[in-house]
Amino acid sequence: MANHLLLFVLIALPSVIYADKLLAVAACQRGGNYGTGTIKEVRITPCPEAAQRRPCILKKGTNVTIEVDFEPTVGATTVTGRAFWANRMLELPLPNMNTNACATMNCPLRPNVAQTYTYNLPVSRGFPTRRYDVRWKLTAAPFNMCFQFPIQILN
Ligand SMILES: *[C@@H]1O[C@H](CO)[C@@H](O)[C@H](O)[C@H]1NC(C)=O
Image (cartoon, rainbow, N blue to C red; front, side, top):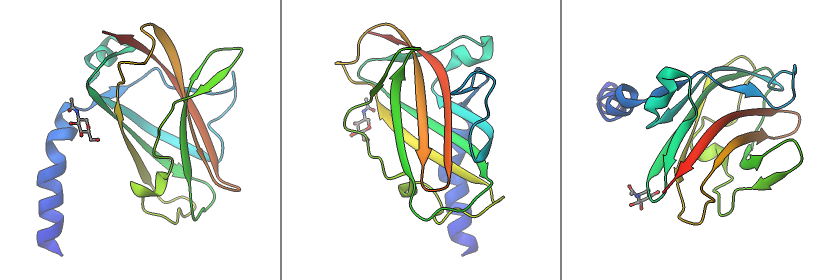
């Protein structure tokens, strides 16, 4: 058990070192909260732009990792994770996502127990080259959380 923990720490360490803490995370509704959860930190790796509070630049053909530390206020057994390109008018779901959020979390979620949701996102060449808000939703009934952050897709 201790050996497994040590191995986990050694493997996890590089991503911690290179992770860039995202500061420009907002609730999905203006003036709203994130839902039935409290977001502690969102990390996008790589995103050196986060240090200057600028939108993360996602280069096509690379992978970015999104990690969200949060604490749910209610429990949930199965949780769905979905990302959308969003603006004031519409939400376009990101295609071909693995929507099983429990794949990277300790499900079931328990109230007031910290969780980290991780998603490895391949930046497809098909993504339009421009600036967007990405809206991320974690849902289960009655658990739900929604947050968004700006990104810039580049070739
Ligand atoms: C991105 O991640 C996938 C696995 O999710 C892997 O197959 C692929 O090689 C990675 N691409 C790059 C550029 O690292």
